Amino acid sequence: MLFTTLCYIEKDGCYLMLHRVKKEHDLNKDKWIGVGGKFEEKESPEDCLLREVWEETGLTLTSFRLRGIVTFISDRWETEHMYLFTADKYEGEIGPCPEGTLEWVSKKELDRLNLWEGDRIFFDLLERDAPFFTLKVAYEGDRLAEAVLNGSEKLV
Image (cartoon, one colour):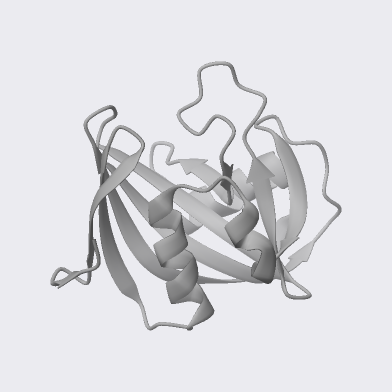
């Protein structure tokens, strides 16, 4: 089982999005996602979040919030539990990212991006400022086969 963090940094009605185009064998190849990554030994979710954001962007978060936990299940990769954060304050300047290209994208323009279908669900929850949530998304290949909110509400 894999434990990860993902963060959507907000500024002026935009999210800082990462277009995953640099790694050859990347599960997220050509997708747009937030910034984050895998836990290292002895890290808390917050430790992982701060380290990954700094490694991928050069930014130091000064205000962030845990919004939910997303469980990804797939017939192609191991189960992943992802701690989903948003952040609205940071220090530093954005630098080059080893994972892909960073770009500020208006929240109103997210639909035009190549996103995972399950990501569209949690973007909606973030936009509605939903209380803390859990979301289970199951994929068959790249197709979203199931989505369950808070253990009981079937969305797909």
